[in-house]
Image (cartoon, rainbow, N blue to C red; front, side, top):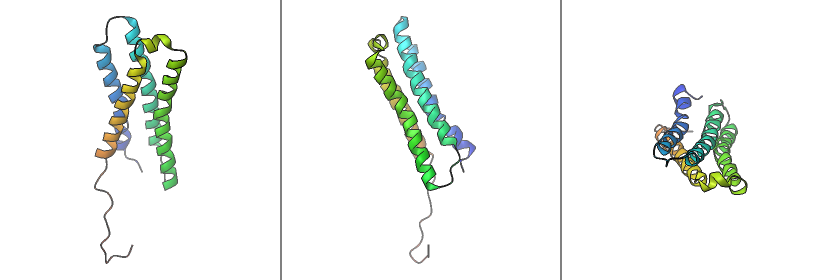
Length: 136
């Protein structure tokens, strides 16, 4: 069963993307095109992060359901960014020229790093190892 703390912990990745986007907007060159590129990249990554967080909040009871939820969360975090990059190559030339592709990759990596840090730091000591004379 997931606790409220672990559900709130899932918001770390979207919050990291939002902070990175706010920082990028603060130092963006003047003009609407860089701001549109930052906003596009942040919205794509935030959509993926929030969708992955929602899947992570679903209650799962079996090991196979946990694996399925983990794979779904990974896919929901990755595929919007890939589709966004594909769209930038195919039709979003003005946003691509403004640097949306690079920012999309940066925001995705920020989201991934925040999620990895949460997973590493959020784990407890783990299950107790049985002693050699114990019957499992």
